[in-house]
Length: 291
Image (cartoon, rainbow, N blue to C red):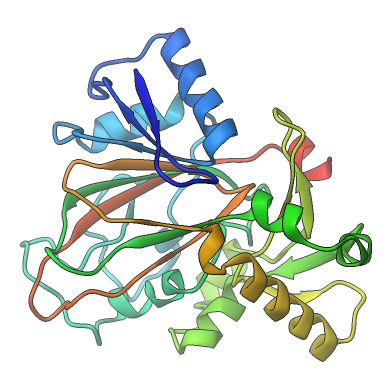
């Protein structure tokens, strides 16, 4: 496995892997070590990776989370495996769906800076996003290094944030972009969670900001004051120096550690191009959250 750093601060490209085949323990440990060091890893040339292969590979890293789209009765799921989240603009027949389709509207919060499944308990640990078909322009995914952002804070802000927690809810991120509100089934099955504003990586010991568009307010703080602080931190953490923009190629599998990165999708001309991307994720552990 060859590792090439993709950004001065974080993110790396891995080559020499053939993921449709089972990986041995040494290789899996090397990928985990790369994730601990770089936060984001790009594994190129995985065109042969199918749904079953992606699920099997992801499962080697932890307990798989099921897709929240299972809790919508007003939308049809194109992919049938519960562990897969469809981040595409095509239907079951391969035809483009319009931007006004509910399925596309439900993806709009992904354009905000976020950490996957931070509204769940346990939240998301690693996310695996595989590109099957990509548009020739647009549709990049931006990543922000939350470790470097924390390191760059002044000492007064670090002291201010110590011990603070934020309430995360999917309802808040949807409200910000005008996406459909939570359905009754979603509200029953996707409760709110409370997460620390600062996390310590259990492997490296590095501190990072733990932010997300799902973070509605800060526990115990005035609503307006808390949201202003979250907005300030988000703007600081996503400045250009901390951001790596991944330009997708079909066959890419990108994995990232949600404990120390944020990401966002960027738009592309949906009226012109198809995109087929599928996501799996594994959950964090309660012990890591408590720490």
